[in-house]
Image (cartoon, rainbow, N blue to C red):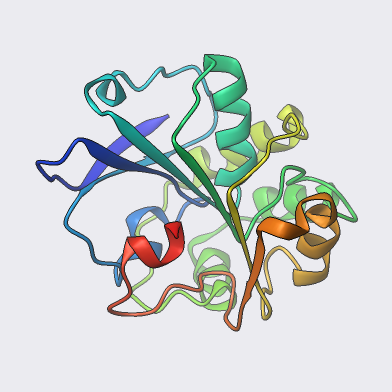
Length: 206
């Protein structure tokens, strides 16, 4: 796991963002807010206790894309209980033919990964900023780790956002995956990366 501060504030609350595969902070470039936001990425291993969180009274976990299952695995493994849990554009079953992405498709993405294929992935995902640099070997290893780790433990989220034009984790798969938590589900008319320029973190956490 890698950690990167997106913003530092002086409040007693923090938003911990489990980002998506390979896109890093680029997915969240348009989001604004005054509080502390810590980005977590690289899910090859999920054994980092993230000691920075101990100094905060309130912790909101915002999990995006493959970060949804990774955050759930991490919370179960570490025994961490945040104040609020938000899932966006992802499911607890990332490598699943019905409730995620077919494992064969993930393996194909990993095995055929190149700068060009990653650029096309970012376009399908709806990334509005420049395509970030990618470490091919590391990104490939992360995808294989996600497949091998499998589905995350059942986790209740306070809010679940499903984009209606998701071309990465199909919207229908997300709807099926969250059928038991419909009271938390909200739909957004957007792509896999649904965040708009000028939006606040608070809009997604509410």
